[in-house]
Image 1 (tube, rainbow, N blue to C red):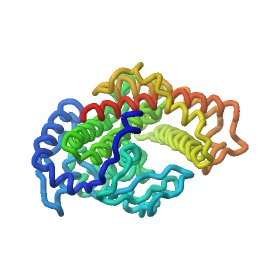
Image 2: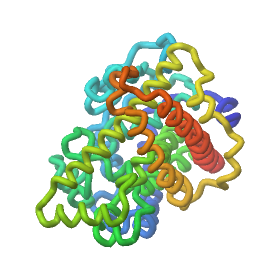
Image 3: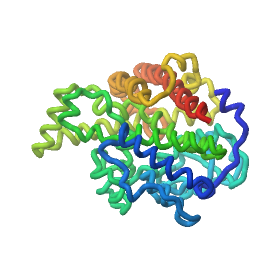
Image 4: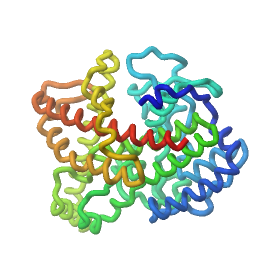
Length: 394
């Protein structure tokens, strides 16, 4: 994107400094932001009045801000940038505990970050790209009443609607998944599937990004924009937009009915099935990209496809309906094919720890790769269209 490549470097600013300088204007801005959200995005979970942003001092304002956004107040929110695989580390390696709530447990060896200093000039593209991963590092963890945190009892989201409780990061699932295209019968029988919040998060962070740019806080303009970008990208993942690929409406209703009657084996089997495919396809895609960057193989189709911009104008301008009508609909429509090719390629048994095993079906894997590459063309377009909308506001 020329808009990013040619953009001047931005000065790193602490969150506290931004909030202290702008709190008088942020108070009404965030109040109006939540009013609009209650009308359009989170009707079932409005912000409790007691949590409305009211400013604060240097010691309290960060906590007040995170509570007003209904985020996990323990999120580190350090100052760092992500290093691409294969590149030399340009500065001190970041302590994982300054990046993610769970530190090394969360980051493992998959990510490498380096510290940046307050006042340092940094690339806006790197700020945006790094921020695009941050919502997975703790922002949305443990926000429901039954998640064991005191703030979860204050936030008004109620009991967690769904998510695999065996996975430590599962409490963030309703914020990172959006089921918008299931049969009305499914939604009538399982209304909990509608209680998801990715649109709400994008609304919050796009609003804050726009204000940060307008008020001259460009570092936070890009960082907030990146936070919102995460949720748009999440919905490009088929398992984030479809409850049970390759399951028909009748099958899903039958599974739900049996669970209601106390026979949960079919439900648990379905959860296991989807969880394994969900995580395996993400790990396969990630490891392929990581290895390509490490080996300087920058012509890999996964990389070239996401850079291809000729489809950008086909989808129109990013607006409030874009995530549902375009992004998640595409993911929903491709989900059956992805799910089938995972089976046919034997990816669950033929891929482990970033490596292909003898059990893999190479012919079907080539079809899976081709399908992913084709999908990544639209993924790249959606990212760029979202970012362009954010940048045009400043």
